[in-house]
Image 1 (tube, one colour):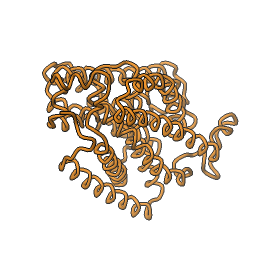
Image 2: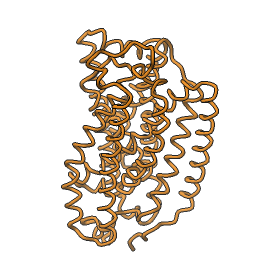
Image 3: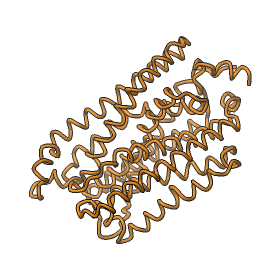
Image 4: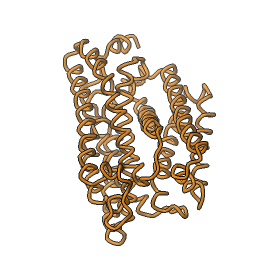
Length: 388
């Protein structure tokens, strides 16, 4: 029996309700904190926004990647990827407070501060920054809208030609994604320290989005796998494929991160090395060690195990841990720019993380309940479900 158009799962409704409550409480705490320390509010909010945006954008990229490559692994997590991509309009709204806090976050936007180099001043200025942000969101919204429209039409009609149209669109869509994420990374992260630059940062940010997006989708699938519609298709072989793909992204993120470090350190240029110096002293070096162990070494060793990859409950632990490590990674990227002398974890950091994350998760769960659990008219899936 194929899934109904809308599925009912009381646990998901309860999770949505509690996520929304946590999000509202977290954002309320941020609002109160802003009254006492406005600068810290904007610092914390930027980190939290970037961390949760990464899952939404990374999910959209993974969806397009699956459209191009195919494979059963992508069909079982496609609804999670679709629902996450439909949270981008929410992220547009959550971005608006950051538009008001540019002077608090970016030195080039402050009056009386040392201005960036002449060639940078034409790029790093408030009007052009906001215009570029609008372009990024417009591209992401357009890509997500078109892909979701094709998917909804496929659910309604079962027309096999729609899968081909999605495939043809996903190639240019991935190019647009890569370009916009690269420039958004320059604007929103690199320009926190405008004299620092890295030619590989865009590629690093792409992997830093796709890795937590895949881990989040796998974790969500482990909860959905208790339902009959999904259990019929989430076989040990599919779990193994998902675990292998997760391992590949862990290795890719590590490769990008180490490559950036090696290129900058071997170049021995002061304007480049200072970025790593800030993150390797004053307590920040311990967070770097946590990332090296928790975001690479430990998941790398665990995902080598076939038993862990084929066991949903064990794979869930690894996936959730990688999502948490992704949040730590974005904190390590952003926070040292505001506290270079010593490690600092402010209560507003946690409040913003819970606030933005709670609202995002509640909206994600709402989007998940709007469509069938599986893309039942995807090529070959109906036959596979009938056979199972």
